[in-house]
Length: 479
Image (cartoon, rainbow, N blue to C red; front, side, top):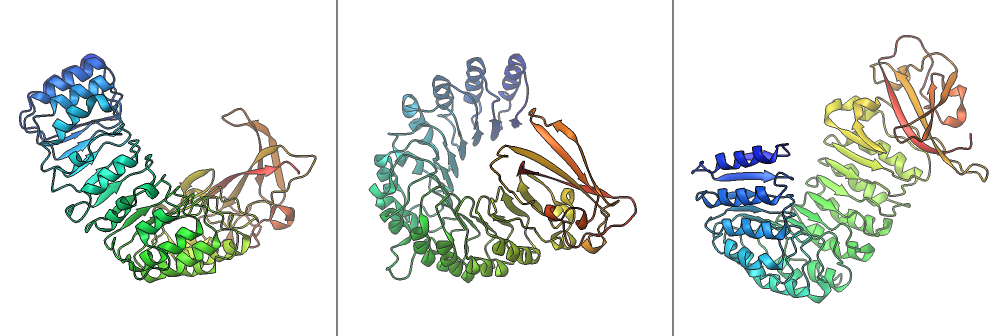
C-alpha cells in the first residue's frame, strides 16, 4: 500500500489507517512526505502497525513526527521482521534509542536502512549490521561524532559482503581523526555507491581513502560505480591523489567533484586518468570550480567520453577559447542528456553549437543555461549569443533584456528567418517579482546592431515564423 503527497482530512486519514489494519497479509507500507501530520494520526498508525504481523517494508520518510511519536512507531514495529526501513527526516534522538535498538534487533534480513537527518549521535552503530543481507545504509546528516565513526569502522569490512550503497553525507566526525574508517571503505567488496559529500576530506584523510601520491598501485573500491565528493575541500592535491584510484576504477560511472576549489591543473591531471575508462563514465559534475585557463586535457577526455550523459560546468568561469572548443565537442556526445551551464560566469560572450538540435530529437536532451532549464526544443536552433556585459561608472544597476528570435522549423542556420529588417523595442514592463523588465524583439539582420553580437549566419527573408527563442540575460544598463 503506497500513499504519498495526498491531501486528506484527519478523520479521513484515520479511517484509511483503520481499513489498512485488516490487511493481514500486507507486506509493504509507504506513508511518505507529510502524510502523518499530528499526534492523533501517529497514535492510530501505531495501533495499525501492531496488527500487521507480515509487514516487511516500512517507508515513513519526511513526515513531521515528534520524538514521542517516533517512539510510539518504533515500539509498534518491534514484532516485525523488517527488510526495508526508511525513516529519513523523522525526529529520532536519544530518547528513542532503546526502542530503535529493539526494532533493529529483529532485522536479520534487512536490505535497506535509512535514518538520514535523525540525530543518532551516541547510538550503537553495530545495531545497523545485524543483517547479513544489508545492501544500503543511509546515515546522512545524523550528527555522528568521531566516536561514532570509530564504532562504525569496527562494523565495516569484508564481513559486509552485500553492502552496495553507503551514504555518510554531512556528519560531524573528522575523517582525519578516524582514519581506520576510511580504510574500511576500501575493504568493502561489493560497494557501488559511496557518498561522502559535505565532509572535510583534505590532507591525511584523503591519503587513507585513496592512498598517498607516492604510494604504489591503488587497491580497493574496484566495484565502485558512483563517487560523490562534493564540498569536500579536496583541492588540486586531492585530484592528484585520485589519479591512481580513477585508473583502476573500471566500473566508475558517476563522479561528483563540485565545490572543491579545483583549478585547471587538477582537472587536467584527473582527466588524463579518466581517459583510461572514458567509455564507461556517464556523469561528471564540476560545478563552482575555478576553471578559467587551459583545459586541453579535460577537453580531450570529453571528446572520447562517448557515453557521457550528464556534464555539469555551472559557475566554472570558462574562457572563450574553452567554450569554442566545447561548441565543437558537444554535438559529438550522442548520449548527452543534460548539459548544465547555469550561471557559467563566462568571461566572454560565446555560443553553443546549433548542430546539437540537428542531431537529436528535442525530447532526448535538456540544456540548462542562464536561470532556467528548458527543453532544447524551446530554444530552437541557435547559436545562443550572450550580449557583451559592459559595466560603466554611470550605469551600475542591472536590468533584464529579453530577445525574441524568430525561426522556421528547418535547423539550418543559413536559412534562419529573422523577419523584417530593423529592430524594435517595446515599453518597459514588470516581471512576476515586480522588477522592471525591458523587452526587446529583434527582427533585423546582423547589420542592424553589430554590438548585439548577432549570429553571422543570420539572413533576412520572408515567411511566417514557426517558433521563437526567448533568452533572458542580466546585462549592465549601459545602452
